[in-house]
Length: 167
Ligand SMILES: CC(C)(COP(=O)(O)OP(=O)(O)OC[C@H]1O[C@@H](n2cnc3c(N)ncnc32)[C@H](O)[C@@H]1OP(=O)(O)O)[C@@H](O)C(=O)NCCC(=O)NCCS
Image (cartoon, rainbow, N blue to C red; front, side, top):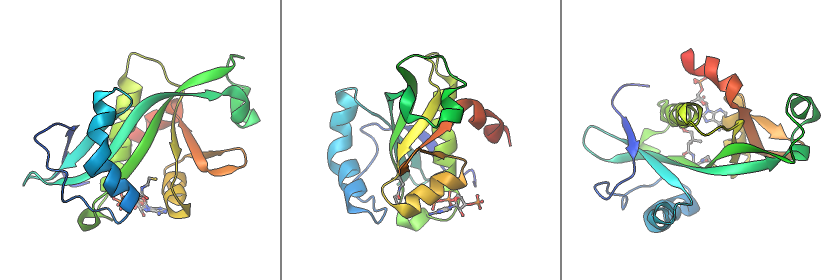
């Protein structure tokens, strides 16, 4: 990605009102709800900012856990037999229409993986619920694996992500 975006924690200085990723629920969440979720500590939000200060994209992260039985057997076998494993959920990811196809979605995903990997609190994987088939294809393109029979619920083991981030 061109170095023309800074990725930082959402704060009051960011103008969210013009954001348009083409998905009404994702626009509405960002313009109307995200600050309440941040205040209540149920989500953290990070934004990509242009040199002119406009918000070009955002994503959210929160702690989550996944029942061991939901993981594909090949993955579950590599883990201790706890009832569930800790994960980080990327609840939302969106790029403004003006900035799509320029590597920003991938850069936001890499930033989320870096934050999850550098936390002192352990997490086995980054998990997502893709909103449609195209979003699921975006995640699969980046190495995400579907949970069993739910093609839009996907995970990426963080141990797998490490080499990707160095590339
Ligand atoms: C999905 C989304 C975040 C992608 O952002 P983007 O900035 O346009 O994507 P990028 O330019 O970073 O693409 C990076 C790579 O992913 C690939 N890619 C992008 N969209 C893809 C898709 N739908 N299916 C498969 N691959 C895709 C690109 O071809 C590119 O591949 P390359 O690195 O091998 O060249 C963006 O289209 C978006 O905001 N969509 C609406 C909201 C949405 O669907 N969010 C998903 C969360 S539910």
